[in-house]
Length: 251
Ligand code: URA
Image 1 (cartoon, helix red, strand yellow):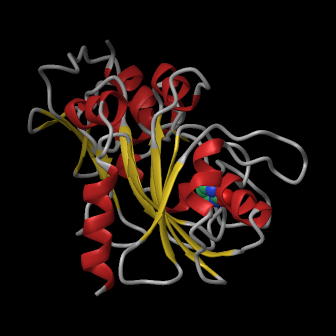
Image 2: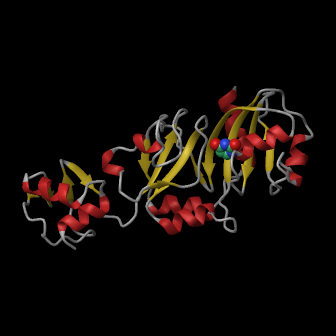
Image 3: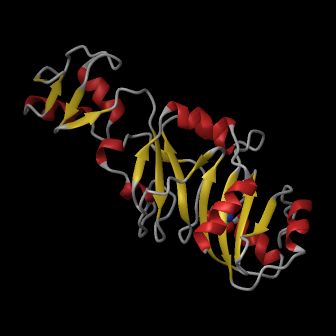
């Protein structure tokens, strides 16, 4: 593959911009500056740096963002801050998109990738990856919520939710952990509205078998390995253990 093709598929820059950068000596291949846009590169063998930053040779990128409030889950929405603004340039590619969505006021784990097949796998109704949310209710939890959620809540517009699992975080009165295997629009908020309550805070704390890393600050992101992605797709997080973790973090 030519160097300019390699860089164009793995960065946000156009081929024209990249050719200019190459000519200005801003690109190194295996430590040596090159001014040849047509230099053959092997993504698995060569180390390419653009303006001193490593450009991953991997075919696809999997980025895990700790989404803060105030950003919409979209690639472009006029008049709004989008989650794309939080992705550092070296992790950005033209096709990078959020997988599923978190509301503007929600926080927590958000996956972004340029792997369309993986994105489909995560959000497809059939193969729904488990999503775990920690929420704060405006009014206290009631014991009949869990069986109603387990039976499948009917939303105000008549839409039927799949059975889900929810429990009060022990030692609290308003903190709840909930696990869903689907992703309807504003689903958690609408489920609790149907129960006569209101969600005031919502954080996604795990996706499949992958937990939000406790040391990942709000607004920061990391690259996931192939192994992390498999763990997310193929495993689930044990609900009871997660509840215990949240009990500890509340006390
Ligand atoms: N459900 C919601 O209501 N909001 C989110 O952001 C995620 C799930």
